[in-house]
Amino acid sequence: MTALYLRNIFVVLNLFALHARSAGLNISGEAVTTRFWDCCKPSCAWKEKGPVDRPVLSCSLDDKPTNIEAGTGCSGGSAYLCSNQQPWRVNDTFSYGFAGVYILPSLTGGKIEESWCCACYQLDFTSDPLKGKTMIVQASNTAYDIKTTNRFSLAVPGGNTTSHDACARQYGVDQNVFGTENTGIQSKDDCKKLPEALQDGCKWRFDWYEDEAFPTANFKRVPCPTELTSRTQCTRTDEKQLISGDTSSATTFSPSFSVLSLVVAAGMLFV
Image (cartoon, rainbow, N blue to C red; front, top):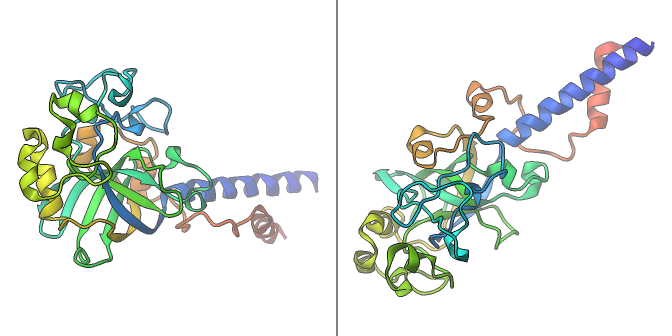
């Protein structure tokens, strides 16, 4: 009896571990999208933000990869957001990009940045005029200022600015070039005032993204394409598991999937 009981418990624990692991991979739901570009070192560029091979690249004043240990340009440091971590159009209905992410803890088993840093997500827009368009974005940052909904804050030059003067210091221009606080620039013509390296991503906002402010989208985690990881140099260690499809049948973390239900399942196996 003792040996059988211990074997049952072992099965229970393994089933629970498999479920918890798959829950962290198959995250999906509904979200709102916003915009930002503050030139700060991305949150996922710091160490120990998640199970990754290395943090997201940040860049120096000359837009070259900088030391992982460098502090953020938003607080007097030397690390800034790299210019190539901006969105780009593939065709009329598909784009790539990067985002600051916040996913409700109810979907991540209570985890925050360690759940999403450097993960990639497919965004299928559900509101007009973007309905029918899709993006794949990599989570390079964190959007902590809104915690009541799932959120993808797209990294768009001129898309939004804050009171920080990091962009002015990074590019040697007046901060006003990047627009007004919490709004960004006003028109596509204003994109011409931005540093040349940022102008294409700025124009993307008015062309492909149609200058929307809070479009909604359905999201799901997907394997990261090299088009994105080649720019951040960051890959999660669970990517192989995601690609192999070893994610069980769970799609989200469900509190109702309890240890008790696993005990019952194990008991049925060994009666």
